[in-house]
Length: 92
Image 1: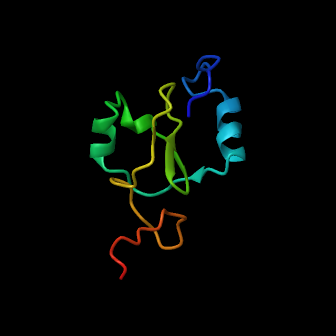
Image 2: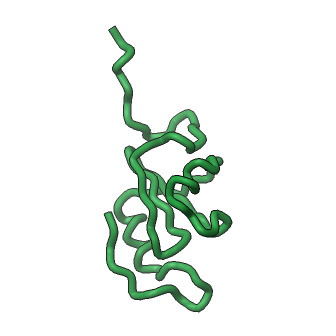
């Protein structure tokens, strides 16, 4: 999901409208570790600016205008109690 941007503000960050939008969509700030492979996959130019949010089934970066998003939890530190997709493929 990408919404149009009105451009970066003077500090180089995304407009607050996008941040408000993803919060309203149920995203919460992700404070866990993100593996370098995630940034390599997205060809991130400056991972130090990354600010990740998540909701069940989706991780969204708000660090730049690219608004990188993935539904893969690979490369993201997992925590007990996180709303993650349930994998029942091993249950019998």
